[in-house]
Structure formats: C-alpha cells, structure tokens
Length: 365
Image (cartoon, rainbow, N blue to C red; front, side):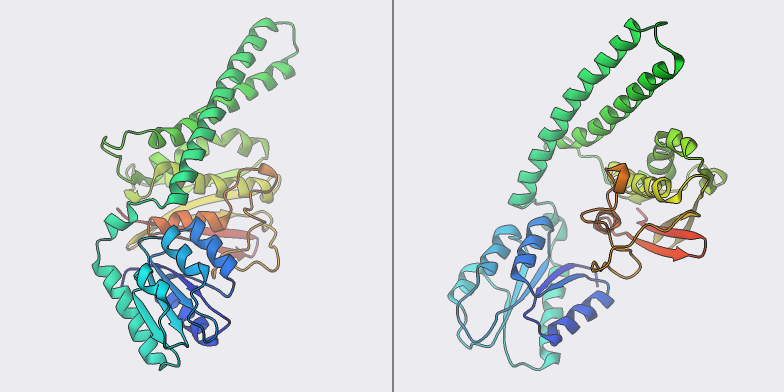
C-alpha cells in the first residue's frame, strides 16, 4: 500500500496511539497528537491525506478543529470517532468520510481505517497533490516576493563592491583586497541561489513545467561541493568523494534539484561546523532498489542533541526550528526529512565510533 501522510488527533487514548504506531510500521508518515492546537499547527504547515479525530466525551458538539481540517486540507479524508450516537450536524456539512461510534471493536476500527486508505489509494493522487491549499499559496507568494526583494538588494551590493575594488585598486593591502573579492563571490553565489528559487516561482502556469527529476552527481553533489570548496579548505576538511571514481552517469532520482541541493548543502555545512579543524569527510553512494543511497560520513564531533525533542527513529533531535547553528541557514534534519519524503525518499542519522554517518535515500526515477 502506498504510504500516506496521516494526522491522528487523540484525547490521550492508548488505543489510537497504538493505531498510529501500527500505521507508521506499515510505512505511513503518521503524526499523533493529544493537543488540538498542535494539530492546527500541523494542518497549517503540511498536507495530510487522512485525518482521524477523536471527539472528547459524550457530546454532539463538533470542535473548531473539524472545520479547520476542511479549511486547511480540503481534499483530506476525515474519520471521526465519538461516544455520542448523535452525529454532529457539522459532519454532514463537512462530508465526513466515516463516523465510528465508540465503544467499537478494535478490529472493526482498523478495518474501517484501512478501507478509507484503500479508497485514497484508488483515487487520483496526482489531481489532489497538484493543488495548493490557501495557506500554502499565501506562503509561496510571500516567499517569492521576499526572494525578489533580496535579489534586488544583492545586485546593489555587488555593484557597490565592484566600484569599491576599482577605486581602491593599488591603495589597499592584499588582505583587504582579498576580503572584498570574497564578499563579491559570496554575493554572486547568493544571487544565483535566489534566482534558482525564483525561476520556478515565476514560471507561467501554462508553460511546460520541468519534471522533478535530476542527476545525483551533476545536479546535486558536484555543484554543492564546488560552492563550499573554499569553506572546506579554510577549515582543513579532508574530502574523500567516492563518486569521482564511479561511472560518469549514475542515474536520475525523483526530486527538484534546488530542494535536493539544499538538503545536501545542509549535511556538508553541518560537517564543517561540528567536525572541527582537520576532520575528514567521506561521500559514498550505492543502489538499494528502489533507492539510490548517498552516504556522508564525518569523522568529527557529533552534532549536539537537544533533550525533550523526539524525531522518527534514526534521526537526531533538531535545534529549535533547525540545526543550522552558527552557519545560519541550515535546513535541519527534520525539514530535510520532510523534503526527501515528499519525493519518496528518506534520511537516516547514525552516530558511530569516531564520527557520524548520514544516509540519504533517493527514489529512483
């Protein structure tokens, strides 16, 4: 069965906690929460294919959460569990897919949940996933405007740096001249990065969209290593890239090259930040049907782990909303995982003696 994104809004029931664990074991990306506020936050930031809500107590009143489900995820299937034989009036207005009256035999609850998942699998997923809900559209519009404004500022900064270098030519010592040159290179890189994000954002809807398929080495690994080469050298990181010894064409994977570069860039930045001076960085690659596996081993220090924050098995806790740390723009492993899972892949973090290993699974195209 194809994995789906499932949200379970519980009331502390051990039964639904168990259901969530079973669904996760079957490969579904499951989020279980006892807090309606947390559920609203998840609905606002992520698209779910199935939402299961357990109404609290014996009441026919439908919480505001039910309305939020259809407002934020209008195409999601909705299952309600309740102890009141009277179906809430809102359920008819919201087109609830199933109402399970409790108490109910666990095997029957499981049968009805899996039946709903089967119906989702048989539906046309492309049509559903091609739609953006209102919060997504608003967020993308704001981000596009932000990137556009940042690009304008960078263009002005680049012009000012070039003018400063011309006027100060032969009047400044070599060190200051080198700093100005480095600043110019970083401004060029930032402009190129912003334009990569802007290009798809401003593409005409009528034009042919580029397929979300890219080459592992040519589109992802090599551009990021070239981009971060000066930082690797500055920190004395010994790079061992085994991809250089593999055939010229390693194959294609599912995923947008800009998004996958961001994931890989985050891994290398973490290695530079936490590895320390003189650490070694090894990049390897193999096939595990139906995935390509990209492995990054860092001999340096293990990234710090925060307590009280639990991620899926094999991933370390992030740091606040990301673990970019002192380098600033790191995606964090949590967000990296969500990006990869949206393309059918995943990421695994494994502390090891003498360092850490991160495995990136990329779905073959």
